[in-house]
Length: 226
Image (cartoon, rainbow, N blue to C red; front, side):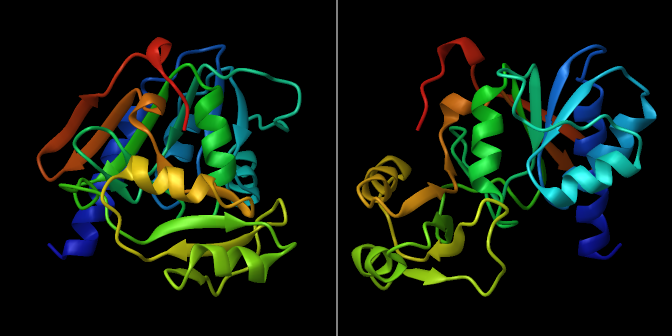
């Protein structure tokens, strides 16, 4: 079997396992990306009575087309569960997210959820996180922000975010995720970055050729935000 076909099967398996974690009459955050594309039909097939919020217009359109009830994230202040993919997953639960350019909204939704479930294929777990790390930058003062970040920050050849941000990626080396978080936080023009701390993550479902591995990171009650 071709590698790409195997990875797609792994994504589907992880997404379908995550869909089974959603309970009736709950509030659900829907992520963005190729793995979430498998989650939406699996969730719709369960025909639950749930209220959903989406992290991107693309996810909202796809979910609505499948009959899922999606509403703006302006009324609800908490979610019961959020489900999303990741670009990298470290053994301790640190994530890199944002290849699809929705990391600010994804982080808002993850932080608002009582349980954040990450769904990935077997190529996403890594020994340690490496660049690139997605960034969302403020358009005002963009040149100054890029100057402060240095040559490691490169603009992405992509449309802006739904909230008007400019997409970029940090390609430099970093010793620890915590150190890079602190460096990025010191630059006012950085609206968001794609580093998600383990304190945000409850479960990681990894699709493998022989099944789905369920990694439990930590209880939501003990989280601190980055």
